[in-house]
Structures are given as C-alpha cells and as structure tokens.
Length: 203
Image (cartoon, rainbow, N blue to C red):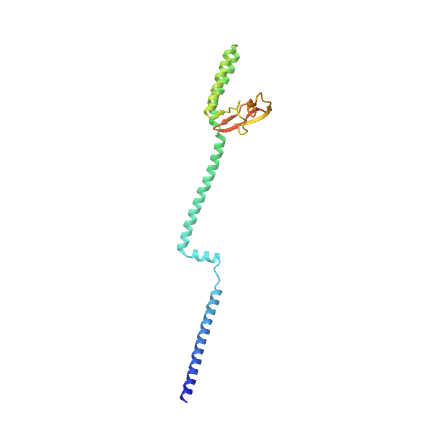
C-alpha cells in the first residue's frame, strides 16, 4: 500500500516539474519574440535624421564648421593655383622663342649693314667675305642653342634620320643601301630630329 502511494506521489511531482519547465520555456520564447519584434519595429535613421541629430550636438557642429572652413580655404587656394598655372603656361608658350630671336637679332643687323655696303661697293671679294662672316656668326648662335646638322653622306640609310626621295643604281656593291647624295640637310635640336635629311639612296 505504501509503495503504491509513494509511486503515485512521485508521478505527480514529475508531472508538476515537467509542467514548470514547459511554462518556463514558453515564457522565454515569448520574451524572445517580443524583443525581436521590438528590434524590428525600430527603423534605422535616415541620413537627414542622422545629420540633424549630429548638428544638434554643439561639439560636432563646431567641428563640422571648422572642417568645412578648411575645405573651402583649400579649394579656393587650389583654384587660384590652377588659374595661375594656366596663365603662366600661356605666357611661356608665347615667349618660349624669345631667347632665340634675341640671339639672332644681331645677325639681322649685320645683314642690314651688309646690304647697304653692297650698294656702295663693287668689290665682290669683300662682299663675299662679309656674307661668309655673317653666315658663320649665324651658325654659331644656332649651334650654341643645340642645333646640329645630320651627317648623312655615305651613311647607311636610316629612316629615323633620313627621308629617301629617290634611289639610283649604285656604282659599286658597297654603295647599296647607303646615302649617295644629300638634296636637303637635316638637323637635330638637342638630340631630337627637327628636320629629316632628304637623300638619294643607292640600290
């Protein structure tokens, strides 16, 4: 009899304990669902709302004004620099050849004096000597500025320096593919070709 009563009592206690665990689990699940629903109901702030909240903070507002002021100053300085650089570039392009013209003006003066001298003199030898001196002076000025003639005669034809205007049968096998005549001189300026030499090539 006592055994049956004890068994019945234990069964009731087990049922009660199971019920309490189930109620606790249900309550916990309910709280999680409520917290999730509350989190979902909180929408993120829009950029305008976020900016308004930040601007309401005096510290952030002052910092924003300082940064914005520095940005405007930097942009203004850069814009002035860009305009000044553009003006300087235009001025440089306009006056880039001023130094070479200044250098050859004395040669122009020499030509003017030579022209007057030729009108008053009948001595051809003197006139030729004067012209040769002017020519040499003019060439020295150009050479000082970096101008060099291309040495083409007898050289192998190189399209990087020479322009073949025609070809003629070579007198011997050694002249094939070589420059046999220079119709117009070529020049380089500081190592860069500014005019190709017009040549005749042996074939």
